[in-house]
Image (cartoon, rainbow, N blue to C red):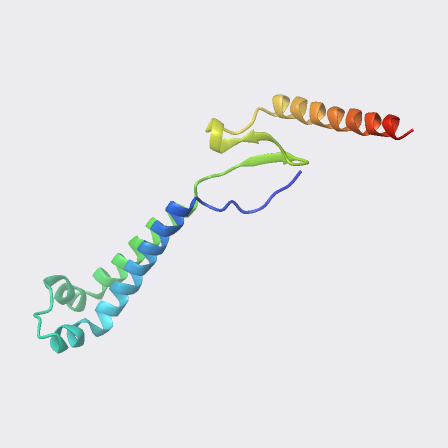
Length: 125
């Protein structure tokens, strides 16, 4: 049996990066937004003013974006493989495996492997 982290699809990875970029943008806006707007001769947006009046708006925004990114990462993948064979895939079925069914699949896979080894040994003789 094998285990390890599941890598989300590329589209989800790009979306997570976009959310992380949004977090960075919110932090930069909080600390340097007035200077950036001043150098570009723009009036600071009202959200920036609200962030400075109440820092919890900035912290809440960054935290909310973090929650979104973490949720996108946790796709609840649960895959069980044996010697490269998938015995159960939560991504395909949407549920956890039935233990009796999983035990039967594992026994069948081990029996097939043993039969393949015995057959190759016979062919070698």
